[in-house]
Image 1 (cartoon, rainbow, N blue to C red):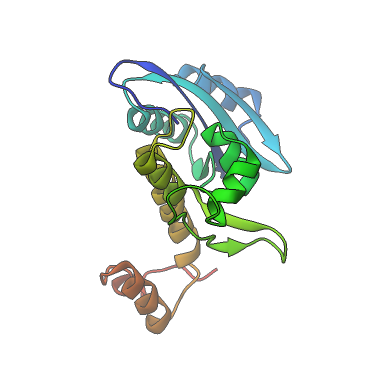
Image 2: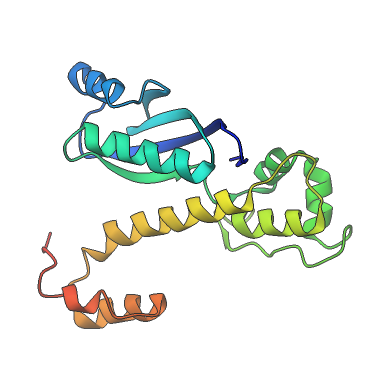
Length: 201
């Protein structure tokens, strides 16, 4: 998730649905479309393409990869992008080049300048999860990370994943009240106009 002014290699994973990408014919189509810099596979039934793409910026690398996979195979959709925006303390330590214990001390305000972002949810009663964009901005602001942290890339992945979730879940909402509630959260009314055209599954 590094972004520089000169061309460099950007690594990320696109999770895919809608067609079997491991089919030989579709794999050939993906490679011919420019995805020869990706490894395609499946993890627990979820299809993915792991990219190492050269581009001037992370945004350009991600945009071109999404364009290539969706144009190569009819009906193929990107449903999620990794590195994921929800992270544990261990993941924060790995992405920042810091020790897990130091991250724990930062999170409990026993070290550092304070203001470490609070967890946003709990996977269970023990496991806390943080929003990586919040952490990335905090680490950048306070110059705490020992490796380069790209807060813009973190924001972009989180925004795109939110858009994919909205696309996939909003189509199951069929009342004006439900769609209005989501539109209110977004700050506009675009969803309410689609209530009569949204297919019922």
